[in-house]
View 1 (tube, rainbow, N blue to C red):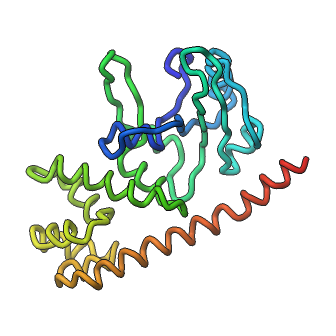
View 2 (view 1 turned 30 degrees about the vertical axis):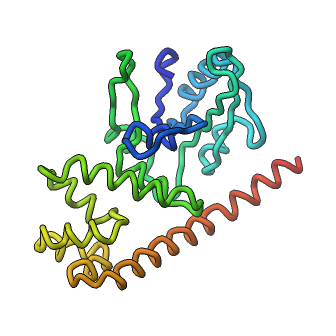
Length: 234
């Protein structure tokens, strides 16, 4: 991607690996800028990887702009069998220029730079109907919490109040920061149960929160699935 100057951000399982919340991922998931120039660059990168589109839809900007993922399979000997999925729009996630502006850039062991979705954007992108994503969200936020709890920034504290999915940790955070906890109830009402220390109500409210997001994601994908069926029939 860097060799061909593709404007893209790593997301999905491999981004979770780099944030310390997973150990393995089979695929490479990328958020990309959906522009003619960037699409040309991605095409050249896929050609270098000897990759071809599998399944539907085909690699067209109209499908990326509609919210579909385009799936590639690599044939190059150094990446044989690797699947690369690209998207430019996701439910509840801001536009790509904003994602790019607040991206995380890591330096890999060999000196390669890797651009990722910011942690907050990755968590938001993971709020889907899939069972495997919710434990991953919990691990992502927990990893950030335990790595920074000794000296957190104001932004990290706000992020934890909004995204922690571990009742015990949210309760501890509310006890440690009562003023901020009270303020954040305006954005996440279940924090009131963390303040009161009612573990059962807090757990139940988190389950309701997850159930709501899953239903929202199902509704979002319903017309997209119909569109995919139409493309398959064609």
